[in-house]
Length: 110
Image (tube, rainbow, N blue to C red; front, side, top):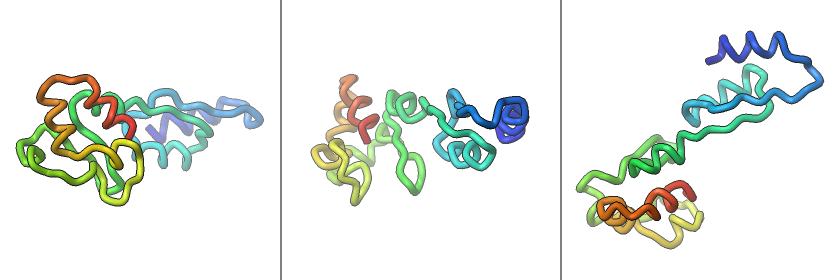
């Protein structure tokens, strides 16, 4: 990724913003910035949310496992987003198992 971003930035005018379309993973944002990208987007959080996974500062987690069936904590301790403030991992796990689309929406909000 960094080789391609550097190569492209060598060809682009310095006085124009440099947008990197479709960063594969959230950690790649830092690589993009270090290599000259000004703006970017990343579909990974919403894509993995459709499979019951989410990101925190400590990594990626997947709520589809049985261990979340009775886990009444928020998606991430200390997070005050709407999903963490109002729903437990157990409830979102239930929504995912029931094939409710709102499970991906709640995870995406996080």
